[in-house]
View 1 (cartoon, rainbow, N blue to C red):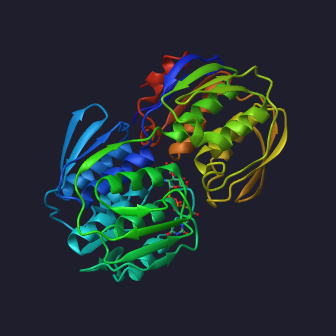
View 2: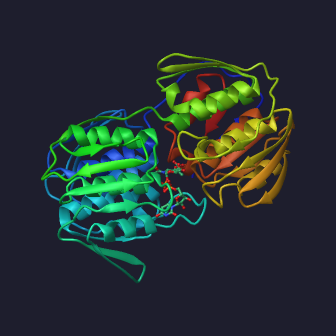
View 3: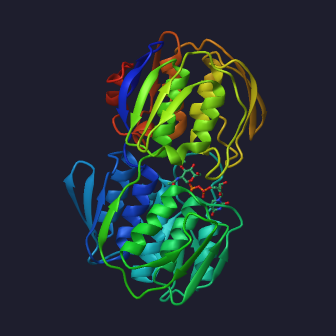
Length: 417
Ligand code: EPZ
């Protein structure tokens, strides 16, 4: 098991490049199964969740070539199984997005309840109800879901909750369903618009992606195509927060500042200087930070995936503020360790905490619980006095490509052992 050894307190300086968005690339790999023609996926982050997804696709019979670092060709000429490997599916939530192309290609699927980050209950009723509405039969026996639908038929689906993967998966399922499918109360994240553009390039007929209303006219089949993964807005946002919290001066390149408007406006209120260009963010922090309240929200609101990093910043800022996590009921428990580092945090209920700053954080020995909380511990360790050890680095590697090497280049004292 790898560990990160971090000595905190250094200012960071220089240029850091953002990789492709994990949560966009994962869905592109799933979408590649919808066609029997080759699909090229570019700007893929070389992270553990992508590796697991590639393993899943290979087990289903897809041929996957690594053309160069960050570029893959997926050809699913035949799909020879309708079972999603339970061992791997239990390790990542995104495995559920494979259910749509498999159902389209095989007419049936079997899969376990997906795993992934332990941040709340994470039900899959939106997927099951969606498949039923499109004409499928759903059964659950001995820990496995069985879905049968020799033919999918378009219908109206109204999501009870805004769900990113739910929207993407139902959009994929409907691409080749008979007739028209209307999705209402959709998630509007940039990854969804990007997936729809790719599917349309392959011959699908999807309108409205990026808004709460999506209409899909079913087509007979899809061609191959090329998908360019959009920049990872969560990685870019985490680096911007790190620069602010560590009193640093960073140029974050290869990102799309438009996707981070809600974060950047909050960072300006915190008192950080920010300049944006089309593909980069320059961030300068004087170290004098003013705390602001945050409330997570679906896009274009403040992303739940940046809640943990932003809490670290709030421990370094002046004032007492509320952090309201509205999306997940288990996504604040990671702050127990932050308290042990010296943060002044009051838990109000599973969705709300109060942070009073600034506080001096002290290095500790920690266990990374999930991708984003793991990154938050890493950031806290970089801001802290003394040495920290972060165990279970696999969780951080699930979402960030060789993060320690990239942070070393901007002056961080971090080692992997
Ligand atoms: C995606 O998860 C991301 N993962 C998450 O990032 C991210 O935190 C989340 O969206 C919210 O932005 C991927 O894209 C792989 P949801 P997803 O369905 O799609 C409820 C990371 O670290 N819900 O939008 O699984 C659910 O409980 C990860 O990269 C239902 O009620 O999240 C939650 O409260 C962590 N029924 C809300 O919807 C369902 O059937 C939003 O979750 C599905 C979801």
